[in-house]
Image (cartoon, rainbow, N blue to C red; front, side):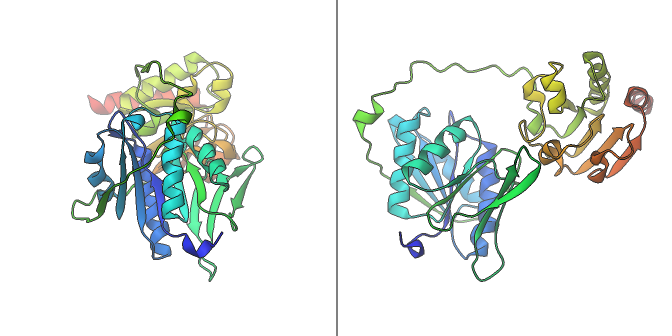
Length: 336
């Protein structure tokens, strides 16, 4: 493999039902930073059916070029046709770096693509950077050993250098309608025999009855110190007054008190709200990995030595079961 032939940062621009996923735009923001460090281009791979209208949005958010693979076989996500399409792009275009969102689709697609192309894959990276030395190495950092340390991974001998990144970890660029880019209709040849082995019988869409916590601007989050559903009721009352949502640490999910969809952390969701109110959360590194990029962090904990205070902008040492209701009542009074 001649590594010198491989260049540019490629992003799998995930779309579902003709709607771009936020993680695609977030990855473009990071790809722009990586490409600029190496004087390279950002290329978005847009796969699906009748989705060319989404290409301009990708350019506005940082892409220099968009490869549009429009085919009936790509209308709904299926592992084999999507893997074939991306593998053909890799073979012909030779990208140096490839980023994929760690969604349900990305977690299925990423390993298959890396295996098909005999290269490595760093899953759930929390930091991506180009080294500032002469080597200009692509460094991928992720939690290891249960989140107790951070490992920086290099892929020196194979290309592309691949990584998946969870939604909410990276920040998307503000849309710039003046950006110019190239939109290419990219033709892919499929092996119909391989694709015919698996067929999509039915798509069942889950109805969302609650707001996705990764999209919330204000989160009131509870940990082991909250203890019970009644305790989370106090957090819900405060969240209602603030116009926010309730989230949780893994401990409360494991205890069956909160749903997994409400979990923040390494094994939950990565959030970046304007306000993160951590109540009764000790601040294990696994939890901090999912919320430390919040704009304002306020922590309430009885233990003044709790690790959560190391990342908090404001800390309150005390009993959350007394403090949270007091805050709620004070907010009600202020709004009258």
